Image (cartoon, rainbow, N blue to C red; front, side):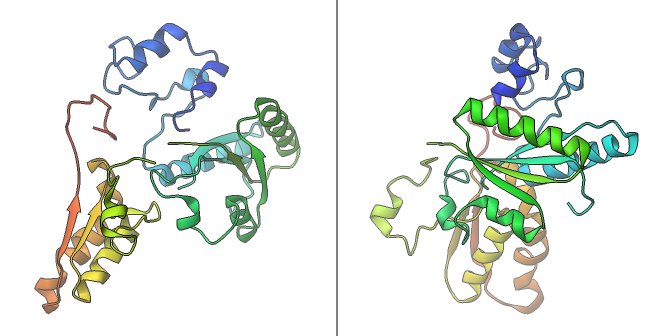
Length: 255
């Protein structure tokens, strides 16, 4: 799950510890290591998330597999953003807020709705109004009841909203969309594309937004970008911008 306060309150997590967590206090669940809701509490059946959201989905698969092996008739639910082959009882809930960090989905995907991706995986997929709490409750309840009887993965796209990150605010107006580009939320693809530009003589700069996310692009950085010029003399003129520090006390993924 990711930044979903409603889940914590709905699971009856004590408000005093939740508030202490938000303030980065020692009495919070991460003992002051995160000033955010990036934490877990197995007592309340909540798995702590990481900001690199893709790898989080496989944990839900493992929990769903445990439910299935134990014959518990329970369902695993995982939250991810807009940026199952074992028929496991997992609801993959996409909070589509209109931006993958700062990139609109229209500049990331060809499909009209992210629920359309479920078709390619052979999964049941639905799109609902994520701001309608009654529709959300009814839909998830009906899905969970059905999945307890017939375990299967479901992709649930919830439409909501979010405000653009603004690190490059004004750059498009000054330099144009040809030079300043939004990218899909995939660090390895971003670095790889920048290196491809460099091979054709361009100078590329990529923005990691938070330094912690660079780990997702390590294969491209270490095995391609760092070694390519040494190996066969090609151009590797890429700047990887990785802001860090700033005293935000925002934990291991946003500091």
